[in-house]
Image (cartoon, rainbow, N blue to C red; front, side, top):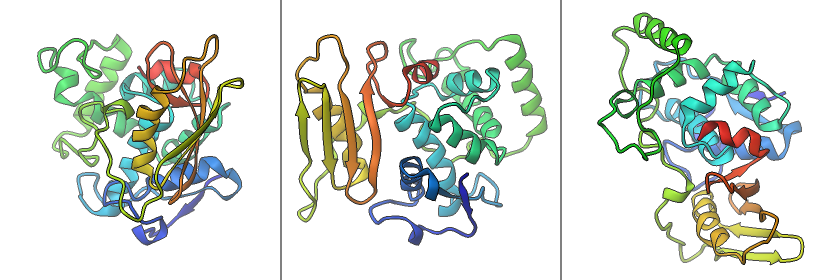
Length: 260
């Protein structure tokens, strides 16, 4: 059970986060230690607000789907999760249900994603772009139409304006290492195909996971399992690179594939 925080502020989380990502460390800390899991309640203000408490809540959902589950297509993944009855057999999916599912936040976020111009306009992006337009099946098309009617007049771009282009770990540019930061370091065991990657900050961790993880020696017959740590946050999870999507994810591959 996730303990919900009321009136949470940026002071409650590690330094090195900004107005968008201040709540993201709580996602990783809760997954690493379920017995002490904690996360802010859904903000009471409108989702179009740019107040840090609102931005942090929604950006944490986006970051969870992107960096933990390894989804580039949040719409596909969330439709799959809902269609399957919102499964919770995996700790990651259980966290999704216990936080954003319990808050009634999944549906408005899904509606927002499916309302993005690049989702609705086939000419907005190339076909191979992560969020290229696609047709919804009849049931989901009717759902989207109903949501549009119910939300007529609402702010068209609510949740932090954060991942409109379907960014993923592989899209991160170089992340600077400060003069006082611990240099990123990796150790690995070729026989067991396991590695440990340690960085100073959360942003450095996922940038180095992409660059340093991708540079590991080829592991015949098995994927590398990288145990990822950030000094300012703690254990971030164990990650593998999908043979099908080429993306990094944590948890079962069967929960990674539907969101891509």
